[in-house]
Image 1: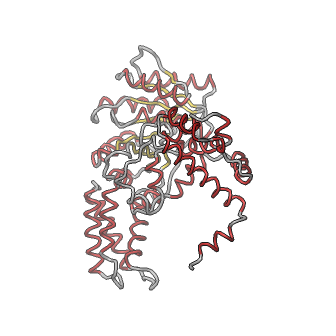
Image 2: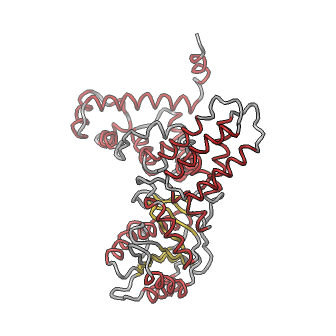
Image 3: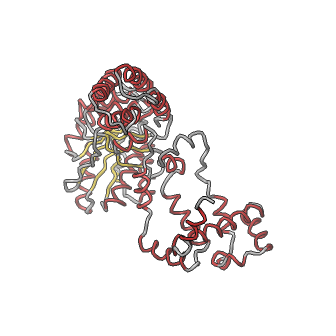
Length: 442
């Protein structure tokens, strides 16, 4: 997402590189390209014009420090305005009420049902909530089955009424069921249509009146661009929803919805979703999204993802093993599993400042670790624990067992040994002085 916009903004800022100061002429040239980049990203024309007018006003009224280059100052101003355009600060959902009722709305195909499952997983695992999913799309049988499958995946029960065609009654009964069984959160997945129509709006309005939800979330497919913004306005006029969810951010989307929707409906974007995995759901942070649009990475989100998989006690045990030179292939395999849980490798790498553009055209296979895992799993427990046992005949057996070749096995073992030595140096610090000495120019 935003790759084309990032490139075009980068080219726009290059107009100011080498300039001694910000002037009305070079700002006008730069902002002409910025506005064109926003329009190409499917941002509403009025929003794009207001945005660039505000940036120009701030740029011309700014006293530029001699230590700050004009291009850097312009990037800072654009970053701040992008952040403000997308809402300024992240906003959480309202979890008051007993039970908390969250109503999910949106067009058919926007990703409502998948989002419902992801939200249930997030609230259960990260907020400690006891969640009940509710299937109120009574027109599309596949939607009910899909919600059941998702519920099974995230270990959250799904309330359904087989044969019932009354979504208002189903929603009411689900809340009564939740109260009786002690569930403190009810997520209601509603029906959508291919386009906005009066029947759908009347139905979801009746559900809203019947269950009085603490939170109404409008789910929008970010790949639909400006149409998504128009649909959001129609839903908001009728439902007065509390927040927006942008789905399919991993698709070929120009990003106009993310940049426009906040200004048009004056409601915050609360979540962003990419991919089909149940943990691929993030709280929306406007400042971090602005970082990514401007090619600055998103190191804060990367650290947060790592911390989610981080176990302090396990880390202490691992540090002791490394210091004693006892780090083995089982530990190595465990670290690989932790990295895989963090998400898509390319997405993770793109969060590192300066890396996103460099890896854009590279293929990152989600099964990149498959060969390594196969080699390690083809070892016996004794071999994993003590790599010195891995002689020629054992390596040949492992290559056959893992479907690789002897060269790949040798390469992994060599890399493992080098990694282990380096980790021991870092853990003990004994060789730090010598390492620093070797790095001095000769």
